[in-house]
Image 1 (cartoon, helix red, strand yellow):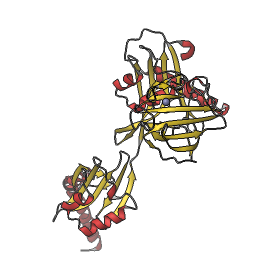
Image 2 (tube, helix red, strand yellow):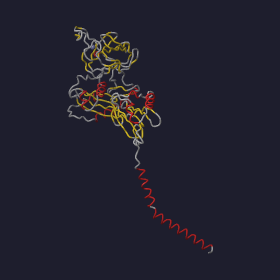
Image 3 (tube, rainbow, N blue to C red):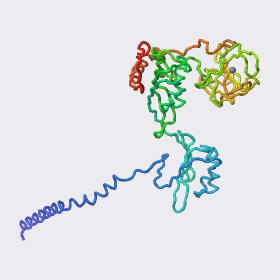
Image 4 (cartoon, rainbow, N blue to C red):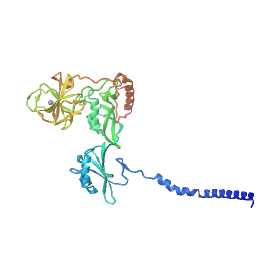
Length: 430
Ligand SMILES: [Zn+2]
């Protein structure tokens, strides 16, 4: 063959090859897809590892339980091949993070273990409260750490009409005692919740603190409206840099320098009365305090910022605390069952828990006897014109007004779940 023929033949071979290749390609083209398809599907159906407490639990058996009375960590771990030596080590090391001796009955725990070749504990997780959990890991030597769950703040609304008490109206709608206390605190100086009327009504927007989709408690009241005898009282939470305070529509503070209720939302059982007949001493002795009946152990709060100048016991007062607020005012808290964490000489902030309701000293039932001194002389706390907190800082007026408008709109949008024929008093409500 000459060179030309070789050339043509070569072209022919190349062409044939190309055609063949393309035919084969065409015919084969579905095949790679068929082969690949299961792989692609397999990739998309890969199961997400099941995570709990930030741990991949896919390969573990899970035991959930609650600590039983007198149960120790050794009792719980015994069936899972944790040696006595490891328990000893755990007991010692855990003190640095969260001691396994501090497990409290009825608190939740989770145990992760592997079943092969024999049961062996991998993780013990303890939940001291709804917010925190402690992980004791036996996977790679001993490792102990404490984690805090993320708290999600959800805004909730509630509207209710008073049929008996504020407490009942809020509880009827699934609201907690804490929410009742928040609302009572917000309006404490504007409204007397013991004399609110049937058909008064309220709307409240408040924070619900959620962890893993479950409520762990009420946060702040964001805004509220309380309609008392057809007059609306408004409250807006605003933080001008030093924490939340509550203001009315014109930016005046709703709060006084003093708490109105040194015991949360309790019942006044005996007023200040200089001519009272004493039930224990059986003679006329002045009652120079206000008695708040409450169950044993109810927290008692510092009525205002100040310094604890007395924390002790006398036969008459029982366990008692005295707080000096400034050159003018001093307060006393009598008959406590026990004290709070604040010691004599320490500063306290308004609302700090300084003790718990009891009946120590001269007392017939559980109550707080609250004493109030003005320039060294005992006076009726409930008749005092007490100083108000400061109004909105002028530098914050614009921001406050924008917030107020937004909250007014949100409050208006909360449906009233009852037939209301009264007209909202426009003068104070707007
Ligand atoms: Zn008293």
